[in-house]
Each structure stands twice: as structure tokens, then as C-alpha cells.
Image (cartoon, rainbow, N blue to C red; front, side, top):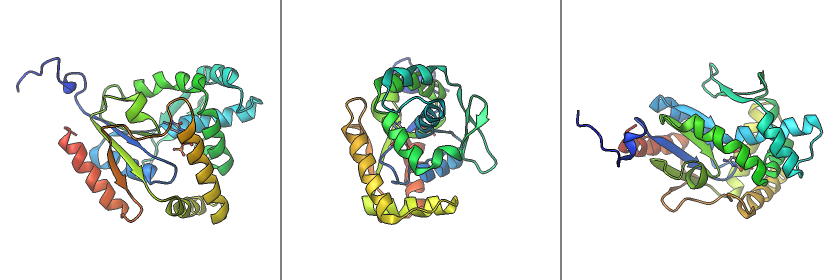
Amino acid sequence: MTPRTSSTRNARRARPVIAIDGPAGAGKSTVALQLAQRLGFVLVDTGALYRGVALAARERGVAWTEGALLGELTAALNLQFTPSPSGAPRLLIDGVDRSNDIRTPEISMGASDVSKHPEVRAALLDLQRRLGKDGGVVLEGRDIGTVVFPDAEAKVFLTASAEIRARRRVLDLAARGISADYDTTLAEIQARDAQDQGRAVAPLRPAEDAIMVDTTMMDINHVVSQLAEIARGKGA
Ligand code: DC
């Protein structure tokens, strides 16, 4: 095998980092999970971390508007992922599995609220980088390709129309036993888009070198195959 020079990216990481960003409901979670399984990579759902902060804050009486307090809370929390038989990693907060509790519509909006604060983003940055530093990982979120891993070997930005994203979200919640109204869900998605795109720190936007994939009319399997091909081209 030819020795690698220090100037190549792969000199630092034996396997690539795959960054998948995009708005709520674009299919990131499903695509990222299936892609990670296909490649034998670890999956890091960074939205779950922001959701965990929102949940912990609500339970401890810290308002989602209090940036400094939220930053302190985030730094003190022990957030960990643990594998599950279904493949989707579970989120442990201080050792307790809270994966189901972070998936409610209220916590979705709370996660978007807490994610506006630079103190919270800074407190989660190191953890996200540590989880991905060795490569062989698919990270999904809003700012992976722009902020967390600007040097990711593969960057994908998934999009879809707000209407199809709302429809998917309603079905997704229904599968978990939570009933949600389509119009309310669409309004929530539009509000969350505006907030995630409009925030001052690390707003939701594609990296300049991201590959744009519009999933509105695409079958998920097709998207996963397309991404697997991209990842293999980067050494996965
Ligand atoms: O992907 P999700 O719906 O679980 O994310 C919940 C919220 O967390 C989202 O509205 C914005 C925030 N988030 C973020 O700001 N940066 C990330 N990398 C991931 C999520």
C-alpha cells in the first residue's frame, strides 16, 4: 500500500465523514440511518442533542429563551448515544433513555428555540466533533457541512417542499402513536424553517460544496443508493 502524505484528508481519517444537512422533514433521519447501515458507519443524529437540551431545560425550569443558563445546562448534561436493535441510536440524558420523549411537536419547536443560542451551539460543538473525528460516520443536522465538519469528505443537502415534508411528518408521528393535524404541522414546519434559516449563528444553509438532493418526488431507496455511491467515491 502506498503511504499517504499528510496533505491528504485520508491521512487524518481512515474512513470519510458524511455530512447530511437539511430542513425538518426532508428525509434526513431515514436516509442517514439507511445509509449508515448500508456502509457499516456510525450514525450521529445531532438534532437529538438539541432536542435533549430542550427537554432537560423544560424539566429543570430553564426557559428556552435563556441563552447563558441553557449553555451552562448543556455543558453539565451527559448526552450519549447508544445502539438499539432497530438500528436507530437511542439518546441517553444522564444515563436515561429519553429517545421517545424528545420526539414530540413541543420539543421539536423547543429544540429549534434552544439552538438559536450561541452558548448552546458552542457547548454541543466539541461533542459532535468528537463523535465524528475518526470518520466512518454519518452525521445529520443543520450545520454539519458548514460548521461542525467543514472538511467532511462528502456533504449532502436534502430538501423537499414544505407540503411534502409536513405530510411525511404527520405519517411519521402517527407511526409513533402521536396524532397530528396536517395544517398545524405545515405551519410548524414553516415556522421552524424560518427560525432555523434566520438565526444569526450557524443558520440552516447548504455548504458551498454540498450536493443538493431534492427528495420531493424521490423514493427513499433511490436517495440512499445515490448517497451510497457518493460515499463510496469518497472511500467509504
Ligand atoms: O433534525 P431535528 O428536527 O431533530 O432538529 C431539531 C432542531 O434542532 C432543529 O429545528 C434545529 C436544531 N438543530 C440545529 O440547530 N443544528 C443541528 N445540527 C441539528 C439540529
